Length: 382
Image 1 (cartoon, rainbow, N blue to C red):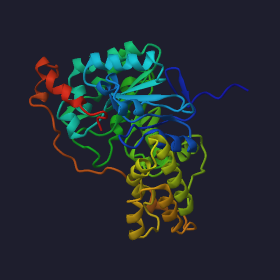
Image 2 (cartoon, one colour):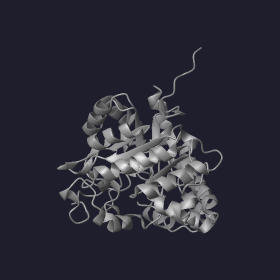
Image 3 (tube, rainbow, N blue to C red):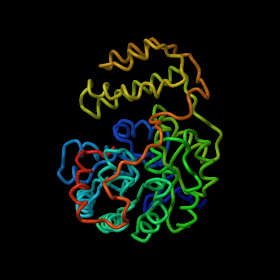
Image 4 (cartoon, helix red, strand yellow):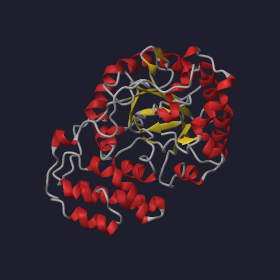
């Protein structure tokens, strides 16, 4: 029998499921990626790391890009605002064999990034965007480079069609569009029609992936059917639900099978996540402390009393975590719709924070160079 064709190819990387874990600062570390991999196939991307921190080899940046031997393919997302620094970071990853895939972030909408011209504000400057993408592709050599972006800055300043065509000409292996603008942040409903327009514009030259408002396997199926996109990128929808990747793999392979954990199964996943985080940080306290942010997501919709939720949100050791989880009613069934839907960041649309005069021209001016460099002061742009 002939071999089953891959569900999605990104350059030489062949995926059994057309699903990508979206980089999320403070979320998609090795521990969470490991959990997600245990439930389903796909591409699992690191937290976003700034190219400047990576070139300077800050300890935190090196931890972010670390992959365990079982993590293949190894996918790293870079955030940069300077073509030279981006090129140096890409060259480092390639020469030191630290990645099999590199993604460039042009989608971060948070004010501390966009007010300096980075993230989703950057594609407005066509020449700067072109230089960064072209440099990254050149320095990557045989390693596939992809881009992740938003529709634009706001409804009056859209960039995604221009950026998509520029990136395709530069030689990227795929691109992802989040169907919101910078101004939208995470508000309202993602514009899937924009994803369809980008797919129509790019055609079959390279894969186009859709992102935004995928909270179930059925959402992924609906997005792909409506837009014609080649795959989906999952962000907030998997927070507290690493089993979503199992649902996605089943659904996109034509199966009706879904993972519907009871409270005991959720509790075991929470504990495993805590163990993996303790291993990731090589410190039990830091690992369990990092788990705290996930607690509300895991137990969304489940019958967990307010006092117990509060104690779980202040847990400080694996022993304490195990004891608190044992207080749950492990027989409580999956609560259905109450456990599904939107989670993570929800915000109102806001006026974008941009450098003075940013929108006056689509050409980058050197007098913005110093201000733009401030966008990379942190290790992660998110």
